[in-house]
Length: 332
Ligand code: TYM
Image (cartoon, rainbow, N blue to C red; front, side):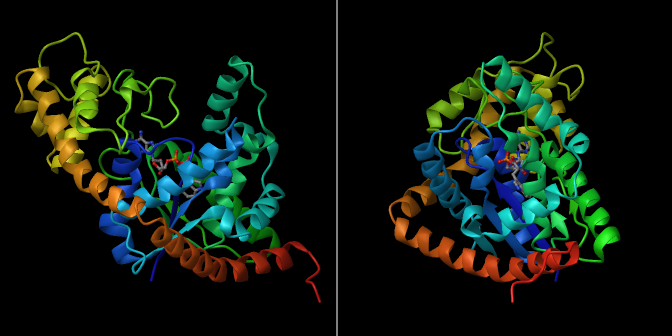
């Protein structure tokens, strides 16, 4: 059976981008057809300025939302990254496999380090080594597939390079995984700035639909989405990114093709209205289930405990093998 690994980092409230780009497919497809692991990758949340209490709160909320969206602990493994020491153990080994040039070329590092410096903050070393930890997350489980949005594919490419290099130098240890971005909504854009990704930690929340936003907030955000100067509803991501983004969101929520949808609308207003209702239709059951689960934190804790135990058992043999292969003396 194929093995799948993916994760979400608790740096902000989960967004519609996280759901359409990743989580939805984990629920609808991946957990049914693979031995799948899904993690709240909390160590990754420490790579930028953070508030400890907030990270803790967001980690629990992310886990609860993953279950609310439909991940079933009887079908897949849901756990928190820091509960499984193997991630940090293997990350160091992969830091010893990667080069600093390789890590400095990562788009996410470039963007986030520029942003941090512009805000007068120093750049944490872990922001640079982030992809080694991400590679460890994936390689520790011998994953075949990594279902992620488009913004993460460069990191998965690096993971492949590291796996191949390690295997060539030290003997076959890791499976070489591949990224599997979704066919639609691989990159949901910010509603106020449709040339940049809808991200959890974008400065203003006006262009971001959060999974836990109230219905009227979702409607307002979508109705106020920036469109383009034209009037015709056309699907043209290059020159009409705002409208194309709405069409892609509607497409992802309705199962219809974005080009076909474009032909069905004569005004931006009507497109926005239907997009808002389609999004709400998707979010409603998640919000309801989230409220139920949030009222029973003991249940979520139990799922995470069991998930971490299982994940540990799966990762340990691979990480031990990597330690031996690279030349570390096994403990007697
Ligand atoms: P993160 O937490 O930023 O996002 C979680 C998942 O959501 C996808 N995503 C999007 N997809 C489409 N449109 C968007 N606007 C959008 N925003 C986010 C992301 O591509 C991702 O699939 N580095 C990862 C977390 C991670 C990970 C891993 C993922 C750590 N280790 C190992 C896979 C395997 C991240 O920051 O995702």
